[in-house]
Amino acid sequence: MPKSISLPSYYQATASSSPRHPPLQGDVSADVCIVGAGYTGLSAAIELAEAGYKVVVVEAETVGHGASGRNGGQICTGFSAGQEKIAAQLGKADARRCFALAEEAKLLLKERITRYGIDCSLRWGYLHVLPKPNRFDGLKQWKAEWDDLGYTDTQLLSKAELEEKLGSKAYHGALREGGAGHFHPLNYCFGLARAAISAGAAIHEGSRAVEVDTGERPFVRTAQGRVNAKFVIIACNAYLGRLVPKLYGKVMPVTSYIIATEPLGEDRARAFIRDGEAVADTNFIVDYFRITSDTRMLFGGRASYTTLEPSDLGAYMKPRMTKIFPQLADARIDFAWGGFIAITYNRIPDCGRLSPTAYYAHGYSGQGVALAGLYGKLMAEAIRGTAERFDLLSRVRHLPFPGGPVRVPMLASAMLFYRLRDALS
Image (cartoon, rainbow, N blue to C red):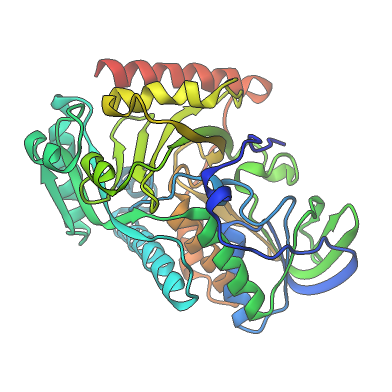
């Protein structure tokens, strides 16, 4: 099973206080046992506990230890794969319904922040920036697709217009959207955990699941206890490993790295990103960046399929940042960290039932900040007897990653191909 890169993150250093949750001890009973205390599992826990279900969440490490507490904090629109792959499987009408659900995912996030009073520095605005001038027609097509889907809070920016907003000459235009943005992901996760506890759910940290039974009488066993339940939800994402054999190979853990500079001050920070939007380029292997609430430049990317960690993350990542912002050559790197996200072969999240009593969702492919909460909510709806929306998303077919024991080097080679394509196209 992959482990998160063990470096202190900016989020950990600036997180709000969060109570510790005791490990599971002995046998307990529940209506629903959820494996994983990230966005997916906590979202399901909130929905079910508020509906009166007895919910127990078991977490191998701590709340938000995985991608939910380590990601870039980018709140994205739609699905990583775009609409065409979904429409090819489900048809255009149902693909539109899937996009509407993805839009609901962002509204759900916003509503929960307001309802539960989660202080997570939420800010709206997102720039998709062009590394190459010959890709502008792609942005036009992207905007046209979103317009057709009813998502019209978008604007095309020329290179000159973009340079008024961004202190860099590295890009050749952008698509701006007002309905996406960024926040402090770990504080949001802690807020979801507090909401789940307030609704009556129990969370047990330091309680790694070592066995999951998905039969007629499901249970989850840890080293020191067992949860006997009516339903099980598996929400481990990139940290699933071989816990559930039927799911092994359906997702692939991919490493993403992030650095955060020293505080830059309001004036200097505004010179880099004038209006405080989140920014990501349009390469297959993206760089993304934003200004934090305490005026640091947070810069991420350099996805790796090998799961091997560079010896000095700060030195590894800083040249990527200074290529875009040479003005930051003198900026101190205060934090450098990494962790795993889960991707699927087709870059569409994978969800479904392993049996009438066992549900799962994972593989958000870089867009889990919003989508994970939605999928957790839809699994809760299905357990409560309203499964139409979950069933729509579960109709997407998924292939396992090819290669068996050699899949990591195969995918690393594929990543090299995409890096070359980004550089040359």
